Image (cartoon, rainbow, N blue to C red):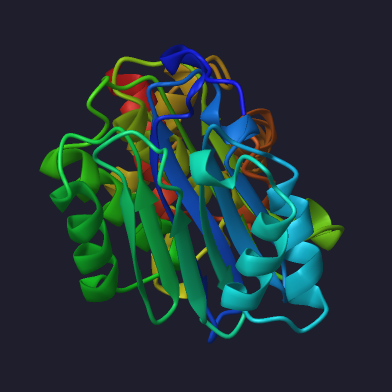
Amino acid sequence: MNTKNLKDVVATFSIAAADPETEELGIAVQSKFIAVGSVVPWAKAGVGAVATQSWANTSLGPKGIALLEEGRSPREALEMILAEDDGKEFRQVGMVDAQGNAASFTGKECFDWAGGVTGKNYACQGNILVNEETVTRMAEVFEQSTGELASRLLEALDAAQEAGGDSRGKQSAALLVVKPEGGYGGYNDRYIDLRVDDHPDPIKELIRLHGLYMLYFSKTKPENILKIEGERAEKIVLALNRLAYFQGEYPGEWTAALQEALKRYYLTENFDDRIADDGYIDGEVLDFMMSQVAE
C-alpha cells in the first residue's frame, strides 16, 4: 500500500456503544480532522454501531453493519471485513452490536499512541494520541456513567480529551445515536445526529448543541409543568415584551391574548413538542426564555 501524508489520517478517538435496555446505539468521536462526523460514525437501530478511523476505509462501516445484521458477532464481522482490505494494518475500527458485544481493531501501521479497549456495551479506540490514558479513561468514565446513552458518550469523550486527547490538537467532533423510530416524526432511526465540523473546542461545543437538541426535541416532564400566575406570569409577560411577541403590561391575569403570544413564541423557537395546556408552561422553556432576555 502506498504511504500517505500524515494530514490524511483521521487521527481520532472514539467510542461506539450500546444500551440494550433502551435499544439505543451510538458513537461519539473527536479528531484533529475537519468534519469527522462524515467519516467515522455508522449505526443502524437494532443492529449495531461501527467507528471507522485512522486512514479510514469508510466502506467498512456499512459492510460491518450488514454482517452484524446477518447475525455475525462484532469479532467475526471485524475479521471478515478486514480480510478483504489490503490496507487493514493502517485501519482502526470499533464495533458493537445491539446486545452489547464489542470488538476493536488497531492495525500495526497506525501511528502511536494507538490502541483500543472493549467492555460490555462499548468499544473505545484512538490513534495519534497523547497517551494510552485517553482511551482507558474514556472506557472507565463510560462504565461509571448513568443516564441516557448520548449523555454517557459525551461524558466519556470529554474525559478522554481531559486525559490527553489527540496529540495533533482539536478540530471536529460528532455524536450519532440511533434507536427504532427515533428520528424526527418517527420516520427513521436517527435519534441524535450532531456534528461540530470546525471549532477550537469541538467537544464542549458538541455538549452545548446536545443540550439544545434535548431542549427542543425532548418531551415535557410532568414535574416541569408550571402554572402561569403571580410573579411567574409577570416575568413571562416582560419577556414576551422584550422578545417582541407582546406589547403591554401584565393585566393581573393570564389572558387569551397572552396565551396567543406565548404560542407564537413556542412555534417560532421550535418548541412544538413542549407546548403546555393554556395557562401553563414547561419550566425548561421558561428557563430558556429567561436566558434570552438576560442576553
